[in-house]
Image 1 (cartoon, rainbow, N blue to C red):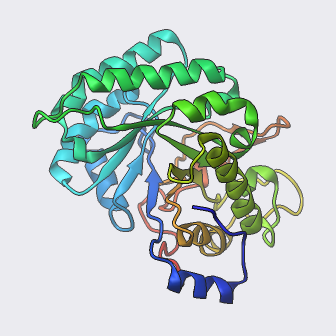
Image 2: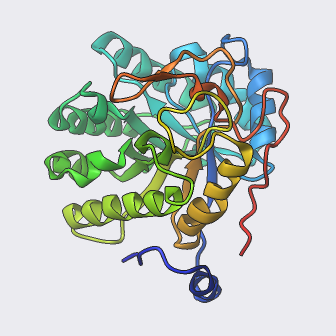
Length: 317
């Protein structure tokens, strides 16, 4: 799919009316609860229920941390309608083996229909945790592991997609072609906040960044018939701004980014995973590339800490 650039609202509404497919909305969910403790199965059940108000898919980060896969397995089975993108956190060899062990132990208790795919690493290239060659090798390793696992009904996980998630500028960088070639899918993270965008430019920046990444990925892969989605995007609704003139950290601004930027991407047929389900009041401070610290990571939920939805997640087109 060759994607158009950002267009006027009137033209976009007409484009949507002629489009055969609109993207699906998903949501990132942390493995820790509001107090920083690991989510129990009951808390995962609640999270799945809250996410199901606007989505049929959640995305996670690590299967062994906080016993995530062990605890969510019964919740997925009892819910019966939600799917999950599983994350593999590859911070070191010991942890990576723990992640693989969790897959081998708990995937057999779940229907493969509830697993959208497995993401090896989350911004591992951006942080420099792995080289492109090393990440590509781990993607291939997880594919081999899944081929030897069957679900609770005896169906093989061999066809489960394995890919990775990274920042949009990493995919524009042509040095990461090994990863694109190895992956069954790629997810792109893009946050206007971390680029210090103004309110008037945040949606244009989001769409442009994503389009650049998609074009590069499609060129490397040699096809436009390849699954590319947004792994994380959204805007904080509170906390400390990083620079003067930056888009305000308000609910109204987050809703504006959703309607003007995220809904544009959905309208182009791109699946988008919002960051994130609920505010995390105990989350550590975040650090920007220039070393600036901010507490914004505690205010990125579409739900507040009491599970009140902050704004509508229905696109106005």
